[in-house]
Image (cartoon, rainbow, N blue to C red; front, side, top):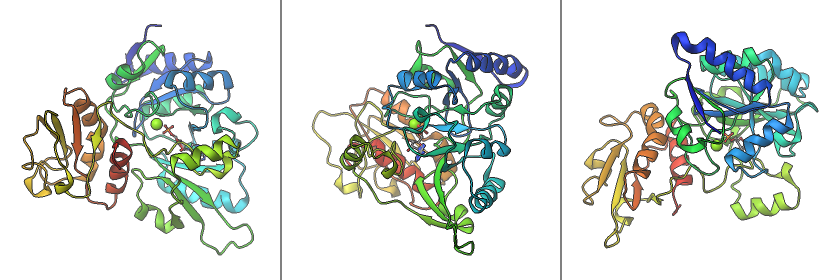
Length: 357
Ligand code: AMP
Ligand code: MG
């Protein structure tokens, strides 16, 4: 199959939207831009189309997908909402949609099991990217869209990165420019006490992302789920107990380059091996972070040169991981960033990309 790239900026958006929604209607896959990372879209109500996502990504069937809506009112069509849950969900939506917040809510029958990997909840969001919004509106049904990369690999933040991942496996990539958040959406499971409307809702933070803990706190108690090792997760899934696994796809190892990537608690823990060439993924490119002058690096890339703005670091993170993956270095060492706000999500991705943490 030949993969076509169509530009969707400015005057070309109309044609791209018509092509993309036509393919979705025919049960085909389309890579689409969102504000977080590029998504690999299919008709979420068509199990055969969704199967193609799992095949193209080589994604294990235990890892459920996020569905994208075109307007908040669609939530009630696809989620089973008690009056209290409806109220809490809509407060969150009002604040954060369209945007990078995914809500995990009880699903309605109409959502096929393959989308949710057999779980009785579904993950929903509404993207702020104008091209994604137009495609969602033109298509009319929810679009299942996980990141447009092969399973376990680095998420794509440009159309070229999607091409590198999925060329020949999908018919169309809609190029809407580089993603302006750069890391995947924040995911929360919303839980309310039906018997006690005064009780604060529980927001279980399943994946750290651009909407940070501090943003969520006014809407409920933010709870981090217990850590589950990959082995314990697999044991539960093998027993068919998908509902006991909070975030099935959040494996300890994920978002990883092919080149081994290392992170350390402190710079002194890095002991270079003889004959190995190392690349450095630096936070600010500054000696004071401890790594720049520690070694004669083959290549250095900086997430946010100078001041170290976390927003900029997030946008550049996956792109620079790809650059270093292709730099020819034998190994990559990454500096972590300040563990506050967006830094939590950046460090989370670095940890999962690393082979030693
Ligand atoms: P991706 O589509 O690659 O951004 O990943 C989506 C992630 O959302 C999955 O890896 C899951 O961890 C999470 N997710 C999707 N659906 C659910 C659900 N019903 N319950 C809990 N987590 C979910
Ligand atoms: Mg992904």
